[in-house]
Length: 99
Image 1 (cartoon, rainbow, N blue to C red):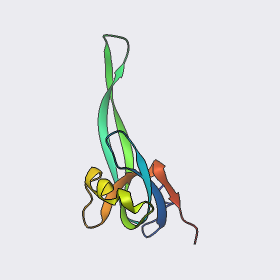
Image 2: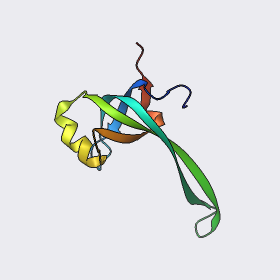
Image 3: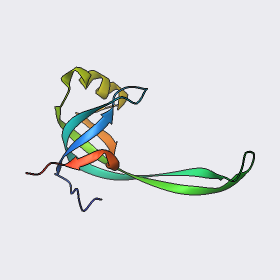
Image 4: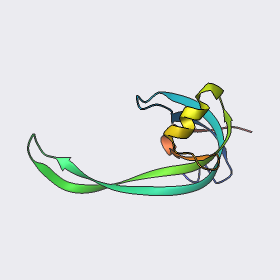
Protein backbone atom coordinates (compact mmCIF):
# COMPACT_ATOMS: atom_id res chain seq x y z
CA UNK A 1 0.00 0.00 0.00
CA UNK A 2 2.78 2.43 0.90
CA UNK A 3 4.36 1.81 -2.49
CA UNK A 4 1.12 2.78 -4.25
CA UNK A 5 0.81 5.95 -2.13
CA UNK A 6 4.28 7.39 -1.34
CA UNK A 7 4.63 10.36 1.01
CA UNK A 8 3.68 13.49 -0.91
CA UNK A 9 0.93 11.77 -2.95
CA UNK A 10 -2.32 13.68 -3.28
CA UNK A 11 -5.39 11.59 -2.48
CA UNK A 12 -9.16 11.77 -2.16
CA UNK A 13 -10.29 10.32 1.15
CA UNK A 14 -13.68 9.52 2.69
CA UNK A 15 -13.67 10.55 6.37
CA UNK A 16 -16.30 10.02 9.07
CA UNK A 17 -17.80 13.19 10.55
CA UNK A 18 -20.52 11.83 12.87
CA UNK A 19 -20.92 9.10 15.45
CA UNK A 20 -23.50 7.50 13.13
CA UNK A 21 -20.80 6.89 10.52
CA UNK A 22 -21.77 9.61 8.02
CA UNK A 23 -18.88 10.42 5.66
CA UNK A 24 -17.66 13.28 3.51
CA UNK A 25 -14.77 13.53 1.07
CA UNK A 26 -11.57 15.54 1.43
CA UNK A 27 -8.55 16.08 -0.78
CA UNK A 28 -5.20 15.88 0.95
CA UNK A 29 -1.54 14.98 0.83
CA UNK A 30 0.07 12.00 2.59
CA UNK A 31 2.64 13.17 5.13
CA UNK A 32 3.28 10.01 7.20
CA UNK A 33 2.40 6.33 7.71
CA UNK A 34 1.79 4.22 10.83
CA UNK A 35 0.78 0.67 11.64
CA UNK A 36 -1.61 0.05 14.54
CA UNK A 37 -1.63 -3.39 16.18
CA UNK A 38 -4.57 -4.58 18.28
CA UNK A 39 -5.42 -7.93 19.80
CA UNK A 40 -8.86 -9.54 19.51
CA UNK A 41 -10.23 -12.85 20.74
CA UNK A 42 -11.49 -15.32 18.19
CA UNK A 43 -15.03 -16.44 19.07
CA UNK A 44 -15.45 -20.22 19.08
CA UNK A 45 -19.09 -20.29 20.09
CA UNK A 46 -21.71 -18.50 22.17
CA UNK A 47 -19.74 -18.80 25.40
CA UNK A 48 -16.20 -19.72 24.39
CA UNK A 49 -13.37 -17.35 23.61
CA UNK A 50 -10.57 -18.62 21.45
CA UNK A 51 -7.00 -17.42 21.18
CA UNK A 52 -6.09 -13.78 20.76
CA UNK A 53 -5.08 -12.71 17.27
CA UNK A 54 -3.05 -9.62 16.55
CA UNK A 55 -4.61 -7.50 13.81
CA UNK A 56 -2.54 -4.80 12.12
CA UNK A 57 -4.09 -1.77 10.46
CA UNK A 58 -2.19 0.60 8.18
CA UNK A 59 -3.08 4.29 8.45
CA UNK A 60 -1.92 7.38 6.57
CA UNK A 61 -1.57 10.86 8.02
CA UNK A 62 -3.23 13.31 5.62
CA UNK A 63 -2.69 17.07 5.45
CA UNK A 64 -6.03 18.47 4.28
CA UNK A 65 -5.88 20.56 1.10
CA UNK A 66 -9.62 20.91 0.49
CA UNK A 67 -12.91 19.93 2.11
CA UNK A 68 -15.31 18.86 -0.66
CA UNK A 69 -18.26 19.87 1.57
CA UNK A 70 -17.08 22.90 3.55
CA UNK A 71 -20.22 22.71 5.76
CA UNK A 72 -18.82 19.50 7.29
CA UNK A 73 -15.37 20.95 8.12
CA UNK A 74 -15.92 21.60 11.84
CA UNK A 75 -17.51 18.19 12.36
CA UNK A 76 -14.65 16.43 10.53
CA UNK A 77 -12.11 18.33 12.66
CA UNK A 78 -13.88 17.44 15.91
CA UNK A 79 -14.68 13.80 15.07
CA UNK A 80 -11.17 13.01 13.78
CA UNK A 81 -9.21 15.02 16.37
CA UNK A 82 -7.43 17.00 13.68
CA UNK A 83 -4.26 18.85 14.63
CA UNK A 84 -2.36 21.28 12.39
CA UNK A 85 -4.85 20.54 9.58
CA UNK A 86 -3.82 16.84 9.61
CA UNK A 87 -5.69 13.63 10.45
CA UNK A 88 -5.14 9.86 10.39
CA UNK A 89 -7.20 7.75 7.95
CA UNK A 90 -7.50 4.05 7.15
CA UNK A 91 -5.93 3.26 3.80
CA UNK A 92 -9.04 1.54 2.41
CA UNK A 93 -10.80 4.88 2.05
CA UNK A 94 -8.10 6.50 -0.14
CA UNK A 95 -8.01 7.02 -3.89
CA UNK A 96 -5.00 8.51 -5.67
CA UNK A 97 -5.50 11.72 -7.64
CA UNK A 98 -4.00 11.40 -11.10
CA UNK A 99 -1.93 14.42 -12.04
